[in-house]
Amino acid sequence: MGAAPDGLRRNGLVDMRNPYDVLGVAKTASADEVKKAFRKLAKKHHPDQNKNDPKAQEKFAEVNSAYEIIGDAEKRGQFDRGEIGADGKPRGFEGFGAGGPGGFRRQAGPGGAEHFEFNFGGGGGPFGGGGGGGFNAGDIFSELFGAGRGRGGGGRAGPAPKGEDFAASALVPLAEVARAGKVNVVLPNGRTLEVKIPRGVEDGQQIRLRGQGQPSPYGGEPGDAIITLRFAPHPLFKVEGRDLRLNLPITLYEAALGGKVDVPTLAGKVELTIPAGSSSGRRLRLRGKGLESATGVHGDLYVTLQIALPEAADPDLDALMRRWRDQRAYDPRKNLG
Image (cartoon, rainbow, N blue to C red; front, top):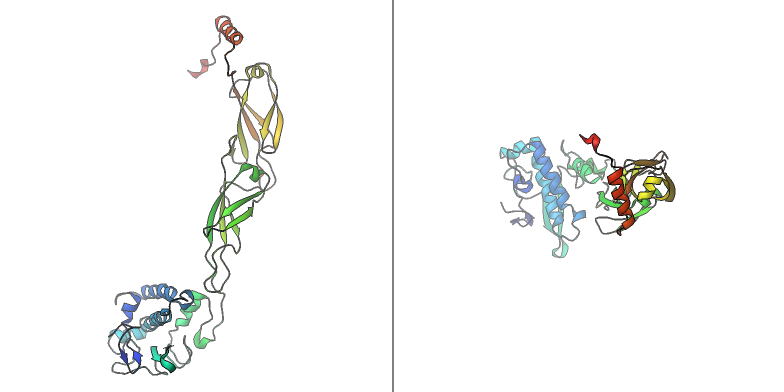
């Protein structure tokens, strides 16, 4: 046999290819494997997705024709036994009748133009009709494309499939997290969206933007955009759940004598009291100065003191430290073992 749609013409029609070859499956393929191959090729060659391919309709119809034969257990058995041909006709039948058991044909129309017909086992519409037997590819198309292509074209219409979702991520500055501000997100198609940050958002939380995904090729609703929000690193604060941690440099005399110092927070500076005799590593807590939760409860800000010596050498400080070393030595590491 010649290969459709460019096969041998007989009486103005085209010979059909072996349906196993059309679907790319072996004769031993299971029914599920045949159906899977058909679904894949039907989507690939559907005319709605190949508007610029003049041969898409031919390929689509050829796939349908092949599945009409080997997708039906009875017809598949007849074909394997040589009782019917790839066109669904009994062996020896020449041509394709308009009201015959089924098949695809490409036939010359007025002015030399070609038109296409495909019959699923009866004189009805192109996807089924009166007297077509138990097999109906329209059920498959309804599942694939959401159209109501049931028997006789009268099946109940279902919603067209949505477009695919987009997945994107965005680094959110902690200041924007704290005030539930906004952040720009670049989608895979290059479009930029300004996204409102939910109050109480958590690091790694996903939000869904309805209708901002891929348009549906079948006329359904567009997909959604799934945005993963990540907290951007901050030069001062480290995030631990809803709490924040800050290393705060203090002077030697502030550590020894105590005092009040300004401490940065995400909402501005606040005053912190340093107890006299504070060592480096001492941790103080500012209640409610962390991040807000979804329930409106704020975490805390934990401040770790770090004694910082003057950048320039100071002879008086050097003399004082020598005197301490010689007269008031102490061992802060005695408990380390």
